[in-house]
Length: 362
Ligand code: GN1
Ligand code: MG
Image (tube, rainbow, N blue to C red):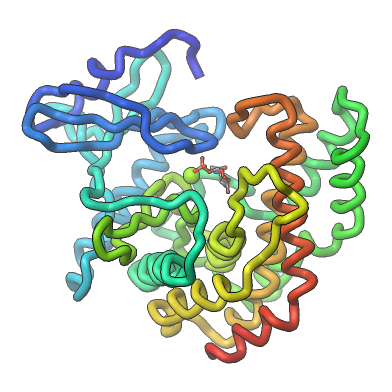
């Protein structure tokens, strides 16, 4: 990322807008990109984002995936209930859906009005809607061939690759492990075999590639401000071919952790079974038709391995000096890793109950 402060209003004004820009203010709290809300004199709102090109080295491909997704959604029948797919806005007088300024990559997308996001879930009703939102998204994309999307982030959610990077980070770190750090290292050591569970199922042909969202955590599901129903999935940078299990696992690890991924009281972290049931009811209610029995067999593994994987990613980044995820304080990524590993432990301790929930919803 460049160090100079960009002129956000000038960048926003280079896109095709209905009226002059009146304000640009920070929006949300993503760990990778920078996001702003743009307001115009006509009262319209948009989302301006600077893509982190260290994470997304080919941002044009990210944009192309977004356009393939929007075009596909437009070809589908209009859903009975409100459901919106964020629209890409082009640069003024061109068909180019991005602006490059000072080596930085910017894009503008439509804003989902009358909708809110949650940082953590406290009630099963919210969990059901978050699950339903992901289910609608998967259902919408279930007839889009995965090869129409580019792989914009090779290795993303390939857990064995993260394990290999972790080993490198562990060997080359300047940090001396003690306390929480030693606990995390021992935690990973005991679970080396877990890392390959989904990749083995893929390699053996038991699970297949489909278009996925890639990052369906709770705060990427927009809920109607008045009714609380899911109306959109946002943050579409990680849309690409993958296993729907990466998404199901990511949604479960995020939605069933009532204390949230930034929790300070790590001893109290737990995976909540009532929320798990609600997420899966919502998800399967919308997407059951697009899943095979084998897909359902791997839901427990998905929740376990994606929680473990995110812990591994945070821990590796801590060891590497916080180069990937944005941090607010020293040790932030280590704390985040502990939260995900505690969540993994809680998932493991409740394996029979989680499998029983999936069975009851088959
Ligand atoms: C990152 O930037 P954000 O918050 O949308 C990350 C996800 C993680 C998430 C954890 C491209 O997403 O994979 O699950 O942080 N995105 C990327 O909060 O690495
Ligand atoms: Mg994201």
